[in-house]
Length: 437
Image (cartoon, rainbow, N blue to C red; front, side):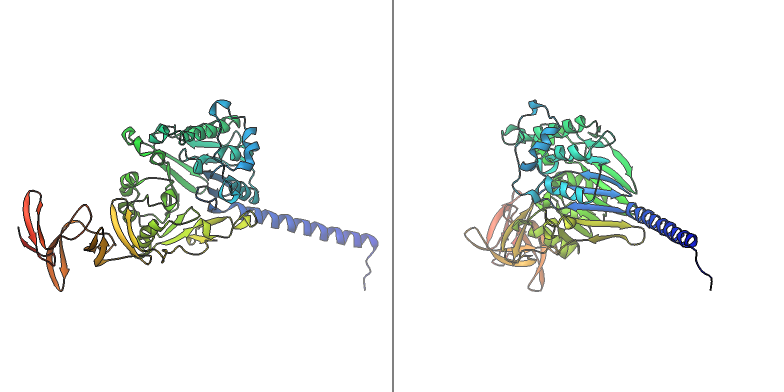
């Protein structure tokens, strides 16, 4: 049996060490490649606010930054915002409902810098945290996409005048870090970001519409990965989504506008028909039941709410709903929490933009319904989508189609009387059937 000399033993262990080191380095390199080859949209849980992280192959972009938080005031001051801006003091008491949650999440991901930031509009729940973000994650290679501030009806209120201060604070914090400012006002703007294509929409706003408030100024972002499309609707109002709906057509995923607060129109949702909806909020108001009903019952949409995930300052890893894009399956969701469903405790009338619905135990009623209205009961008809009808209608009742008229002002069926309609007299019997006119 051949004996190993001391020199041979040393050489043997040296070879093993080199092989292990090479193997470890190879493993680390493979892991790094896998880490960088990711395309994920993170919907960060930060209360009734927006902050959406775009990750692609080791690069990061942030759309909005949530609310400011009182305990990061010192970090904001480090950015040397000019005193002329005035005090920006709309702090949020809960760190998990503010930019602090965003900072925690970016730290957890070990992000060193952001390649771009986009501020959709000058409300504190969208750009209020940008100075704190800029202090830590922005340098001269960071791009900041924004639109010039335009006075709206909100600026007539002393309370809402802070909108302009937040806008200036965001701009100045970027300037102090030598970021590249890109003004997209009234521009058709597209850019590639890693494996994603981003298209900035809704930047050409009619000045006559500015009496509608700052939400009407929202920058909307269409993100595409191969043939899959995600629309980040910021706080876009119904007047603007109706203008965009035909250009957009069918999309796959929608970040619902204005945290779900009934801003999206029926015409818009029925056109884009999202398979999935994400709502960035900590609650769903009862009057949003009709949107949830419409999406689930009519469009078969699955709905996720950022508040339904477990993330917090004690569980930072789970502080975002993750939308993962890949070559094989297109996309999939991770860490979604439970799906949003209507509040079954709610019953009553609910108005969605210009349409009335009646919610009973969390569900929109359909067909003929006798309901309380004002001083007594009246008959109403709700179409297949759950909306009450008005004007002339040919409808089936008791097995026969008849002509009815529903008052435009309250959707009630005209019965047992004669009324003037467009200068002509029409009479209806006790069942609402047209008998003369």
